[in-house]
Image (cartoon, rainbow, N blue to C red; front, side):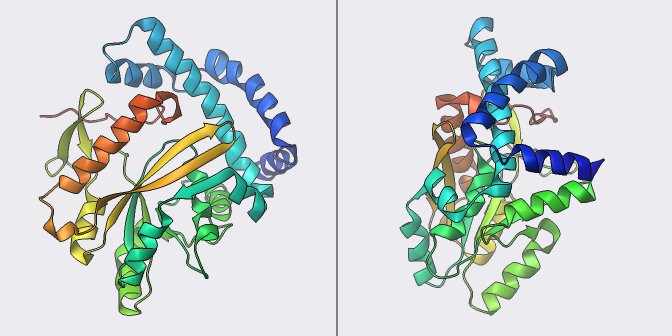
Length: 289
């Protein structure tokens, strides 16, 4: 069954973008009205995040999200047939020099990103770096071995060197010993795991929110500067990623200051264009106290 699905997706994504977006428009009412994929989760997340909005406004954001969700699937799978020139044209970056300045100082960087816009396309970042500088996105293996293999091939296509989460610390020590700079991409808007006793809680989108602190802890441990990857959608199929410094001297920050700054930047981006965040993930599993 997997190979049949893979072959079907491979053939479909040979289509040009304008036809893929027509297909996305066709899928939208099926996913939203018929299947209702995680519809209750999405509606509850948006409703609680924007208590000041009317039900009509909430439903408008909800429908826009599902339209984008269908686009995102098409764009991600289309990467099977992407050339380097196509990726360079559709994904652009700002303040790359800020990262290169840290490399010149002999430091790697931590990049905090989120499930916003087309975060998958940001893995084409090595195309925009001089020489053969890889990017080092941190990931967790998928439950399905076949799906994991597919996503790994897509994510590493343009030179990204993926690091499994449990291997991260070992590889960071190795690169530091070899004096090789890295840029460690951490998706930091997920719900933390554990008992909850050591969670950092903050106000995010009008809700008490348990927050991951791993990136901050590693940044302080290695004294690596931290940047926020601020992704915006310029138009359908075109994105921009701006690297915003969160802390260039993390050892001088107060505890959780880096994490709090990241959450504030992400919140501002979501409030500006909420439809491009992944509302379908169960972000608020835990309640404070």
